[in-house]
Length: 520
Image (cartoon, rainbow, N blue to C red; front, side, top):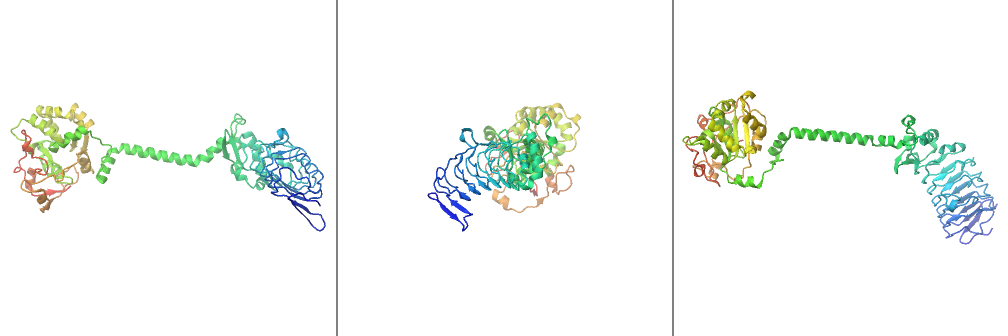
């Protein structure tokens, strides 16, 4: 037996098994001297480019042929003629695209393998085959293994493989099968019977409009009723498949979206409470902007807030509101209408001067205020004059129920466009602090005869600040002298006393002296 160059040949004692080993021998064309009585030929790993017609003529005893991974792009119609005993053919990992036309293997037209009547194993995976004629495998009655995976097959009628009764292993994955319903219906019927033979069913994909979908597991559950007559030839099952693929993601996305909407709506509805909560916990004012001009003006104002109220509500002011703001943390500097005004001054001028000297204006809105102070022309006109450009700085503290019929148009407008806090709200003090300006003074209050350090070091009896309750006379203890007033001290850290700046009103340190202080 003559052996081709760069090859190795073997045989048994009876010469019934003759092996020709030419793997990776560097051949660019078929070796000329392959023995006629060869039974196994290994040509893998070469660079043939093509297998010409009658390449194996006369090798009638050839049973096993390996021509895989040899850069084969062309196989002719009679390449395998005469190999009637061939049982195993390996052509995987080549560039096979078709037969005959242009000598490029892209198609199997039905005649290339017709003479291989004994073939049991055919390996065509990882090529570029996009078409296989339905007659290609009909004559291969003994075929047991067929590998077509990793090609470009689209509409090959796999159900034609029913004519190969001995098939036990089939590879169909990683092709570009059609997603059209009329094709997949027949595909599904055949697959439901032969699923056990398809070792890569999970890798079966279809392509529709350049979009691929995994259809392996889905094909077994394919419901033909999903493809109507109007969509059978144009609509693809990939659409319903995509719905199933993305259904969990869609549900999760929908839930997240709805939750986000609920959170956003809730945050918007409770935006004021949320801002107050953040401020009380973190000290941050969310969505609250002031201009540089406003900040510059506020820096020179004498008081943090001017408090306007009815004389009949003096007890609430002196026992509850003023202690909570003046002696709390932070502590604010207040100008109280009936405590700090000079009784001999003209009321309208004094109100205007007090408002202009304060960073905020607090109006204690009660029935007493509506029926008394608000009815006085000079009082009302003075407030109108100074508040028309300062609405954002106006704070209403509502005590008790006030019928709407008792409110005039001006008051209703003020209530709609300014901060309104109800006494009795569980977050009354937090909301009031949020509405008040930031305190920038290192030491805010000081008794007239004490320094800042001494005031902080002197032990004091603590006045119990009441919870926000409509019955403000309950839940706290106040010394009798504190009913007359709360904060008589003035700031001496950085800001001059009111009497040095205001002619219309002044604080009398001997008029309202209290024993107890409160912490807020």
